[in-house]
Structures are given as C-alpha cells and as structure tokens.
Image (cartoon, rainbow, N blue to C red; front, side):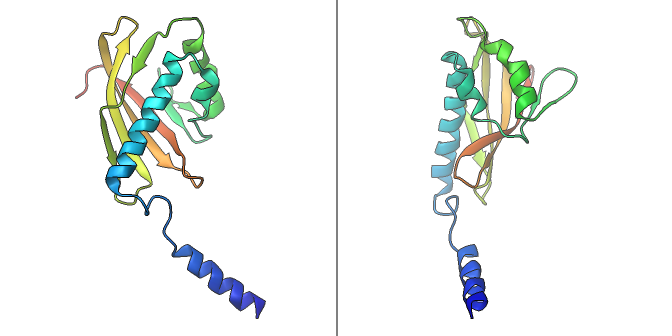
Length: 146
C-alpha cells in the first residue's frame, strides 16, 4: 500500500507547476536580465567570489583558441580579470529571449573597454537550475557581430 501511495505522490509532484511555469515569460525575461546585470556587476565591484557563483561545472566560456570548460577552468583564467583595482572591461544586458519552457535564455549586449567605449558584443546562454537560480552555461564575445 505504501508503494502505491508513494507512486501516486511522485506522479502528482511531477505535474505540479515549477518555478519557471508559475512565472510569465516577461517575468522570466526580467529575471534573466537582472541576473546578467548582477553577473556584470561582479566585475565592476571587483568581486571574484560573487562572479564564481554564477557558474556551474558545465559552464563553457569561449575565450582564445580553446573553450574554457567547467567552473574551475573558467575561474583560473578569469581571476586575472579581477586582479587590480580597475575593471579591464564591463558589459550590460540589452536583449534577453527566454524559451517558452522557461528553462533556457539568451542574453546579449555591449562589452565596453575600461574607457567605456563599446568594443564587442557578448552572448550568454542561461539555464534555470533546480533551485530556481539562473546560471550561465555558455558565454561568448564577438568583436563584429550584430
């Protein structure tokens, strides 16, 4: 009897709305944009520990000839960007698109050098994790893209 009751409970839980489904696409879009901009603020605030909280073991950053795969590899390379008092670059989200499923999103916007001049465009793919937090999965800058 316990197994039948437990099985029914598991099936019912599977059909309950998730955090993503209980929010509108506009709400999810705003949340991703705020998350991206909080991610960018870690650079301005020189807060490397906060930067790392946006990564997962599956995160991939395209940088140089080979992609940086995983949180530890990304941290080892990006720690140099957080050294020193002045941020070497900054970015801000201008465009966000969230899939209808509410679990993946794309964010893009300008990258500025330390003088505030736009030098590139970034593209990030964010995934909604089980705990309800958005984590960056793919990140790639582009010098001459629209």
